[in-house]
Length: 209
Image (cartoon, rainbow, N blue to C red; front, side, top):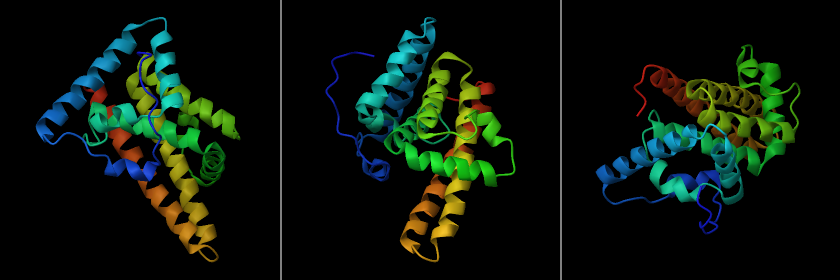
């Protein structure tokens, strides 16, 4: 990634829906798809992995505002939409790894599925390990099998969604506002999981664009 970017202001996840992009929806869509394809192609072409490492480090250091206006409004089951969700996950985990680790562990215990195995976090996963996991998944999207990275991210979301749902139940009797926040988070993560899984299927069939 170029080094001349100015440092953008990080926005909370809840604010991303309010980002205003191009006034021409058709042009906005074209640019979003073109930049997503170009970025993925460029980084994957670097077999050394240096470009992928720099990309992950850049998003950690600067946030994702530089690409937010391009990708945030793309349909969820497209290449820019999938990349946007991967970056949102990275931002969320880096922003509050302690809560992320608590919810992940709760979900891992409660969820009767293989999702925790697919996601690939240590058992149990501490905050630093969860940060490393999401970076590994993002790096894998650019260096390894893109569909596998999407599947791992989807599994990660399902585990976290389960944890948030059960935590919301715990808070409901005493802190209903906190319970409502966690329920909203669980719904968002479940939606991301569905979109990322669908994107993985489309990628394998050559239809994710």
